[in-house]
Amino acid sequence: DPPKTRSEPPSIVPEKSIAPYLEEEHTPWEPDTLSLDSTDWLRVQLRCVNKRLDEVQKEVTKSKEEAGENSKHRSPFAPEIQDKLIPTSFRLPALESYDGSLDPTKHVTTFRAQMALYDSSDVLMC
Image (cartoon, rainbow, N blue to C red; front, side, top):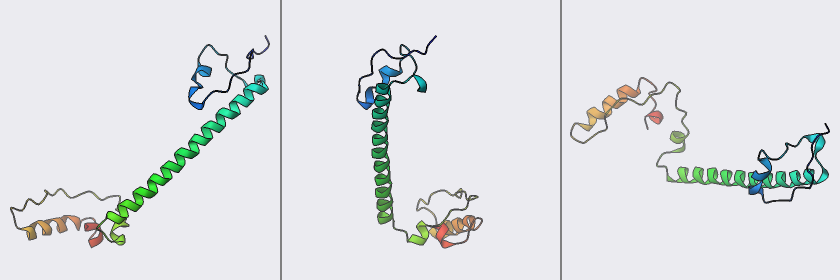
């Protein structure tokens, strides 16, 4: 049997409505059976997808830049504190939040003792 081809060229449709061409009632296209019109249609669809992908990538990049700017401008910490790499073995100390009812010096001393197990730098303690 000769390969099946479409009897009429597909119409060019907006990028969001290509689903009808993917339904089971259509014969799957094979590279050696595509007509010139089918190839043109695929090129148009590919251009639409690429254009949308470029738009999304620009939005993501812009969003990341804005998030980075906002977080750095709002942070009360110096750059050396913000840029400190946290060791992979680091775990937050199992210390209850300070509620004001006990001696704050004792609370800080307990925190420092637990933090000393990981890194004694003031940068990590922040």
